[in-house]
Length: 424
Image (cartoon, rainbow, N blue to C red):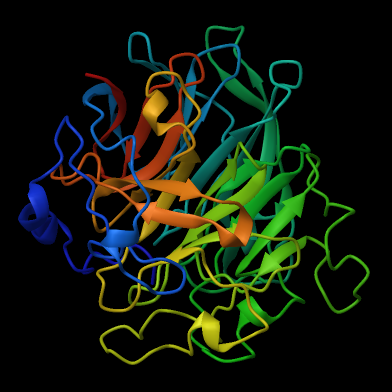
């Protein structure tokens, strides 16, 4: 399952390679522990040069006391930050002074296992369009779409932010989409939400920990909405240009399929391409460039092994011609990179990092930085020296403050901070 705490601890090897990253970035560790390209090669000699390897940074606590924060979203033209907490709370944080205010109106959630209140996204036309979107797990009994169903599923809901009164609120919140079918498990909900450059809403949904590792797996079944990337309109309907809207045997909301549990998603500013990071089984974690209609292989193609073994789940992606291979992956035995949260850096605070992909990792407990050369599925992705390593922080979410260009991270713990990375 995702979020396993027993992945190989990468910090021991990182110490041997050059020490722990504290408030200063380390020299590049090309080829170290999962710095493996989409073709499985591991050659530090061929790694592209890194202009951002010597950047000094400091770490500041913005606010604390959060219970398993999951999603971060800055309000454009406002400067404040929305933070979700998995038990079901939504907060508004002022980064200037660390003030935290509860936002009323969040939905009832299925806060069990990996479920609860998950991601948050703000309409791209905010504040002219004040809608804020939440992804969350809800039980069938609490869902408009759950009539006659059992279990729970990933939902998308929307309300209008009201910040003029003394008490912030998400008014008129309603569920606008529920991924079907409901499943009687509390695992693998996904779930990231990101607006694309054309204004449609992309949402990831996990495979709900289906262990039928064969062609009948839910992630390979286009008639359902699990193990998939969905593309919705801002009102919650299936986007009319989705790849399978004319297929009576496929779900209209599907944009890509064959995913296991994608918990990181970001748009690359230079190309407008949609990127994702997803959890493998035992290792096999992936970074993918998501293409319309693409099959990303799970579980009929994977770089992972079954839990507790060295047995491959399936042939590798390069052994099939009907799936799309990741642009970067961590093979079985590497220790993996169980991911959560990602952003392409486009700020002014760290010009050497512009265009780099930042992604949080949970069990490995650091913030990953990746340089990207080239476009699309031919891009070369290189993992660079880790940030925030040695703090025992499970990195859950990442965001860039629009005005300052500071990097923000949410730490996954029962009494957790939201922190920011600033120039030293």
